[in-house]
Length: 464
Ligand code: ZN
Ligand code: ZN
Image: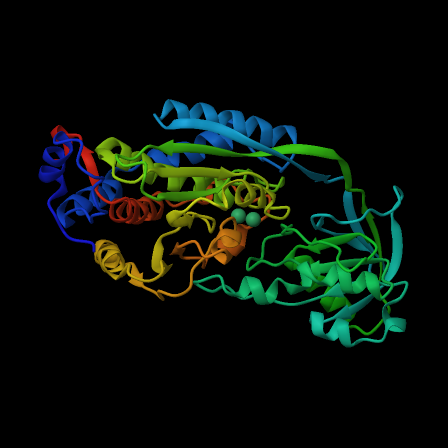
């Protein structure tokens, strides 16, 4: 059973009386949680500093490349300097796809340039490009329903509009043209595919993202048009005349490369207790500097852990992981699950949805954790964070562990602005709102204060 005790004053006495059995997990006093939370809300600069440092001193961090390796070195140095223990890299190898030339123009009826970018794992055109007639669809379903003869030898265009939502739920639904369109188009004999970017902005920036040719589909050139360019193409198509475009895309796979997960621990007072696992992903797409996806994510989780560290030693160990190679297909998550799937975690949480404020928390902690959930929701309520569901949560790099039954918490961020910049050249640090970032870190700090089982060895001068 969980019980409320005054951990700050009581635990040092208990620990002095060794060799008593390990203390049962406790929930720290609300006043301590509130103090940690409110200090983060007013003063946190750690998350900003990490995001600024990583995006400035490393920049883009495409998975499996030399840039991601530099990012790992940076991460090890920073986490060590912050005082984390057991800082190390857990390496793995992976296929590495890199971008080449990417240009397009309408040849007829109204010659003009189009702005696009290759989707991850895209096939290549010949070096001199290829020319073909556009066949347009308004959804993946319409492409599936089309006779192969309509598609064969042509360039497919899927024009499917995504609207912004607070919870980002449109990404699953409206991301289908990017994720499934290339495979379907290839199997129907298309020579290439362009999709309207999976984005909610009207900047002339295309949104990249991963897709994978499945079911033996032959790789074909696959690209995303910026939203204004997709709308321009739709206007031209609406004139009813055949539209021909010339497309040059030369991405390719290089030799398999090395990536890795960077792991760091805040060692708890009772290492025999299941630990907390938190993090984000270190890699980014190559177009911007990966500020909101996902430098801010690793920064938020790490800043919250650092705040607990500065308050004293938590009862449970908090393990921080900066996952490698999330973008091209969660290779880091797979390697981590393979190495640590047998470990027991008290809870896991990942930050991978920008840097805006948390508005809701969903959990899936399992049976017998109601006291912890109640303490968690009470602790974050003053930040305007709502109680969500308690039977469903996840995180991109955690889902394999979640499926294996590990408990998880999802701190839901406001995603209204996220898909304006997601996977574009515009994913840069100037998009981050420092006030919202502090609220985010404050929420994570309160969560860790509750879930870590209390501050077993507080630093008295600061927190009494
Ligand atoms: Zn991400
Ligand atoms: Zn991403």
